[in-house]
Image (cartoon, rainbow, N blue to C red; front, side, top):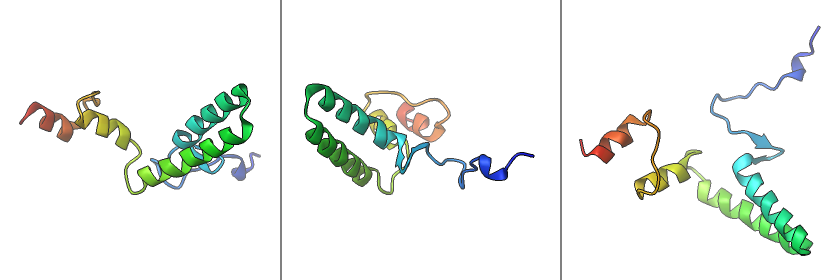
Length: 95
């Protein structure tokens, strides 16, 4: 019999992927910063810059949807959003 605690069931369907207590959008850039600084020989500076990145990113993301960066870039005209976002698509076409 399989233990029911073996599988992780998210509380919400749109819950972001996590790496320990941080979302992947917070953790991956912080780990890249840490890795570059470790290669350069600045361990403590890498830890500090990674922590600063995480706290800055959390403050920017507070109260916004997970894809707010993609939407902000689309509003500035630097990228496009997939066709399923019909309201934004109609606005961009001028309807």
